[in-house]
Image (tube, rainbow, N blue to C red; front, side, top):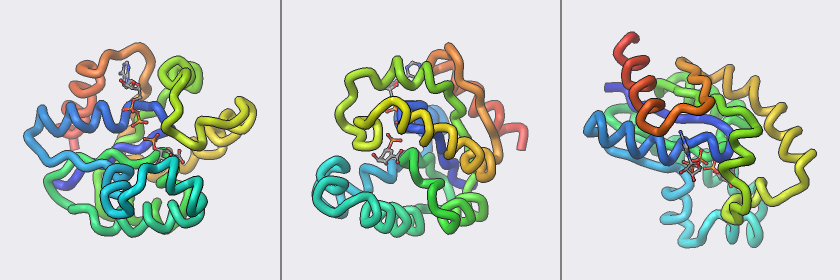
Length: 166
Ligand SMILES: Nc1ncnc2c1ncn2[C@@H]1O[C@H](COP(=O)(O)OP(=O)(O)O)[C@@H](O)[C@H]1O
Ligand SMILES: O=C(O)C1=C[C@@H](OP(=O)(O)O)[C@@H](O)[C@H](O)C1
């Protein structure tokens, strides 16, 4: 089975949903941020602080290109769609599911979250990033799920039924 890649803005549920989908389908779960942290032996905020976003994006692309094309569910970082080469790679090699989540819901979920460097900036900058990225997520997606008030299990069921239709 082609690996499933979850994309979406910070806080859209990629890791939470990805773990649950992998469990339901008995597939391997991978998370690009975790792979980067294991490889570099520092957490994401520290990498941003000490090496900068540009170097983080290089690590992200290298990890992306090592991901298995089959039998995995992969949670990606919210900015993986920033680079065109990443968007092409995602589209060519994976079944890409976009967890399209409103900014308001993301705000509620990430209130007080310190672990995401790009969330720790002024509201206007976060809203701008959200608006700029939306077309890039849509460009890559094979399946777009509009997340509103669905529970984790409801989202998982929607993804699993969506996959069965392809
Ligand atoms: N469908 C959902 N309903 C309620 N809370 C959710 C849902 N999906 C994710 N969350 C919560 O939102 C927060 C961010 O989820 P996470 O999986 O870390 O998102 P991402 O990996 O996209 O940044 C977590 O606290 C998680 O428990
Ligand atoms: O939106 C982004 O550019 C980022 C999102 C983060 O992952 P999550 O989407 O899991 O928060 C992580 O990759 C890094 O902080 C950059």
